[in-house]
Image (cartoon, rainbow, N blue to C red; front, top):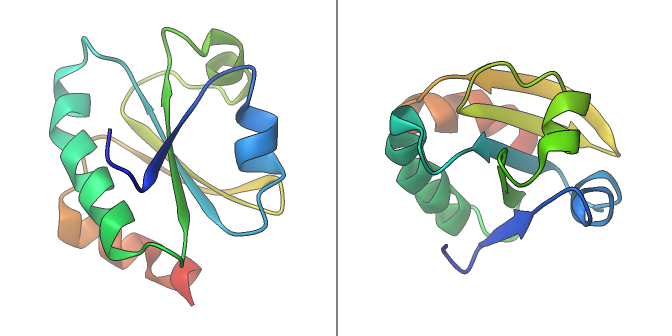
Length: 109
């Protein structure tokens, strides 16, 4: 996992995501998911390009079952945006980098 991406799970989700002082993008994924393997590098590249502007986390839904259930994750990859502990946006499916950047632009400034 890239240095700009934080791995989260049921135990640290509240601390890393909900209590974060900045906007957080969470990638809900699983290692067996083909589309997740496509979007993973896009999310990591986005994290690197926007370091200091947004926090990027990844939650393996096989290991973070309670959190995935709490947020109604029905298909992966799902990307969720959190601000001040609240979910403010969601994207489902493998987004190309340009679409992810455009969708996230309003949260970066």
